[in-house]
Amino acid sequence: MTPWFWGILAALSAGGFALAWWWCRRQVAQLERLLASGDERLERLQRAFERFAPPDVVERLTDGPGDIAPQRRHVTMLFADLRGFTALCDRLDPALTVTVLNDYFQAMNQAVVRHHGHINELVGDGLLALFGALEPNRWQCRDAALAALDMRAALARYNDTLRARGLPDLRFGIGIHSGEVVAGVIGTGGLSKFSVTGDPINVASRVEGLTRAFDVDLLITEAVRESLDAQFV
Image (tube, rainbow, N blue to C red; front, side, top):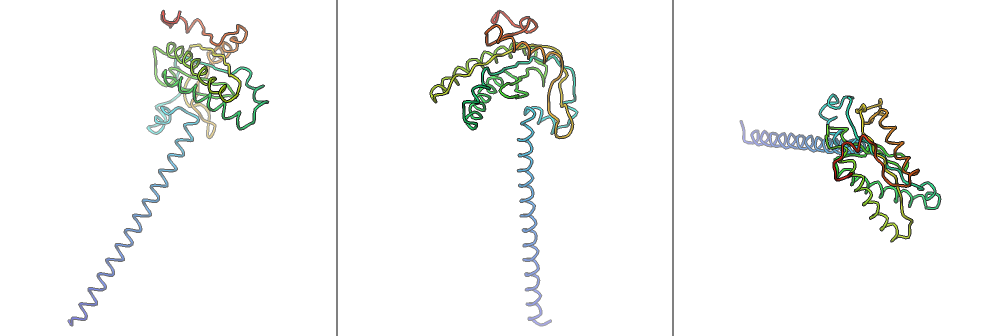
């Protein structure tokens, strides 16, 4: 065969290789974009779900929903509710009201997490924190009591910040009770969330309400007191 034939064949081979290389690189780039997009969507989904469940629950759901099937657990519940905040809302700008409340919840959440609990629910200006809901915890009453004292100190520090901004102090009441509840992912579809249910929840809420009647900021039930050591009694 003539030299020009081999030249044309070499050119075609080189062109075919270049085309194949370009196509492969294009496919790889497209796959990388899809993977990056999938990672971003997964992160957004995880962040969104963490609004309705503590991080431990989110992690368990990725391993398998059977790991957090509803079950009876002995749980300590801490209810905290701001006093007079509704009247304060009427005097503040809506955006400022939300900022004050969000900063308050952040400070309270940090105190709860430091003592092995998690905030399970926010209702208006109130919160429900759980101890021992995810894993058995023989020290859950002590953890809840320490969290309450930490929350009290955190509120005092936050009030210093509010006064520096010309805003009034916040006051709260805390009620703590301990008992057997059903804990797990409750609800269906988009309404599902990790929660607890049972009469002890109502008791904890009523105990918090009694803080107003006795003009104190913290009350615990006998069930909690019996589990505390001499440090608290």
